[in-house]
Amino acid sequence: MEPTLQKYRIPLFIASALFVVWAVLALMDFKNYTYLGHELDGLKVSQVDEGSPMEAAGLQVGDRLISWDGIAVENTKALNQQKRSVPGQTAVVVVERNGEQLELTPVYAPLPGKFLKGNYAVLAMVMVFLLFGVLALISIGTRAAFFFGLFAILLGGFLSRGPYFASEILRNIFNVLEIWLLLLSFVFLIKFLMNYPSSRNWASSRTGKWVIWGPAVVLGVFVSYLFLFMPDSTEGLRSMVNLLLPAILLFYFVWAIVLMMQNYLKASAEDRKKKGLGLMLMGVVLGFLPIVIGIAVNVIDATVVLPGDDFYILFFTLIPLSFFLALRRGTT
Image 1: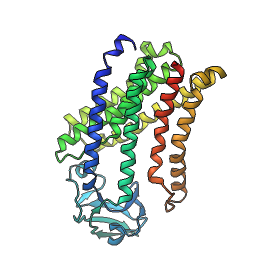
Image 2: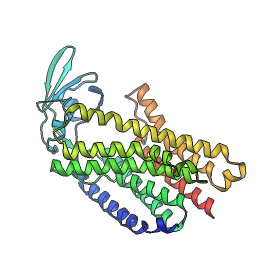
Image 3: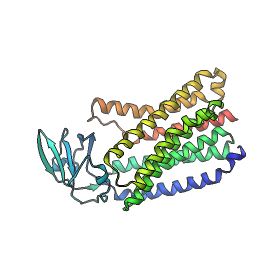
Image 4: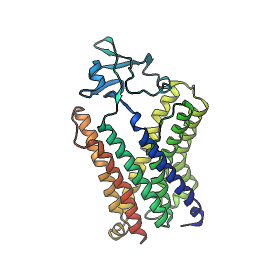
């Protein structure tokens, strides 16, 4: 590995170990999670689980949420300031149904085992991302491997979630940190694809650096200032973040797909095999396919439950696996 990058290996190993600890703390906190059993499409109820506290309270599909414990549902800032619910606690929920407002009083229940399994699946995915990120740094000494390692470790850190903090200040700090981890993981995904199977000079140019880093850094700085120095900011500014974050992530995601396709189409048949480019594409397709199918089925009929859907997220582990194997193949 290049000397300029070599010095970052130990700090990244330490960060990976901290993310593992963070994930374990999240695991220990699972017992404190609560459950009401409903899903929303915007402010409208799209699903009410059979036998759930919300069903017992009388919530119906199509109801529109008005307020929660006396706070308007549009006021996300005030809602986020509320303490975490505990099993046995009663919520006061006002909904609109057929032009009338109804008050419901569901009682929070402990999180059912089905949902706990989904959380375990996420933590398993965290470990896979961290594992292949560290392995890339240890066993492959290329610049591309370094960027892949950063992508996998930072995304694993974002997914590790961590425990709940009662302090709003601490929650804001770690929320900002999570957003930075997510944004930078996508930046390094682009950097990786710009350097594998070969380096692109444009990525090192001034314009290239601005395009690659600019959106993530600008949004990260804005979010940091908003949450850490303007905690009483208006709802409009927070809504802006809720719109900008997915938009910028979509920008990086589409860019990554385009780069992968370009790398594959421009390579000869021999290079595709030697560099594992087909393997990378297959990993991405298989990683996203079950999720896409699940989303499509949910859009068509939200009442349909696919078998094992809580574990579809584990297919995402095929992405770091296929990328790592491609790197190993391409540098052997």
